Amino acid sequence: MRGARVLWAVLPVAATLAVLAAGAGLFLVSGIYDIGADDHHTALVMAMITELRDRSIAVRVEELPLPPAGDAAHLAAGAKSYAAHCAGCHLAPGVNRSALSRGLYPHPPNLAQGAPSEARRAFWIVKHGIKMSAMPAWGKTLDDAEIADLVECVRALPAMSEEDYERMTR
Image 1 (cartoon, rainbow, N blue to C red):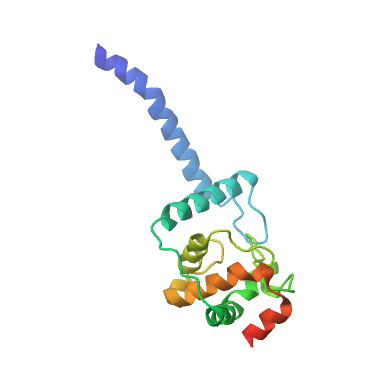
Image 2: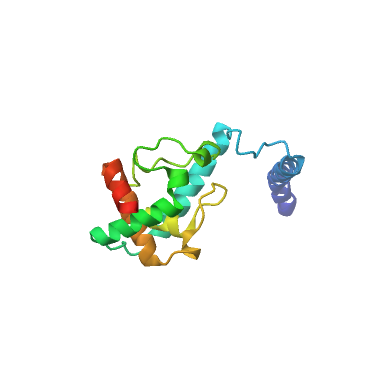
């Protein structure tokens, strides 16, 4: 008798979960959601992606050592690397749009207008990239010292003049 009561208590929960799983499966295979980069996500999807990204990065940056601050030579090396790898999407001092940045969604931040507040977070993002955002994992191409230089440049960009940026990137 007790087993029957437990079954009747669990059955509605199991049925609800099965219906939700079937609905999610149908949604996925239907192709109804437009994943094209020229159309914005719905507010709910964008909120979920943003929360997932932010929490995922927050969990992983805890274990990173703080990238050491460099000198003017490290900043210049970071600026050259930024010009070569990042400016097409994230722009540069005095540049408000590029042919590449117009077609990206989600839109990459203009790092010349506002740098990431936390060096560890910026280091992790540059090194590992972010899925489905066009942000590549530069850790496959650059070593940690080069990434630290690049992060130093990114953090200095908002205060950098066009002339200083051009001088460092020549």
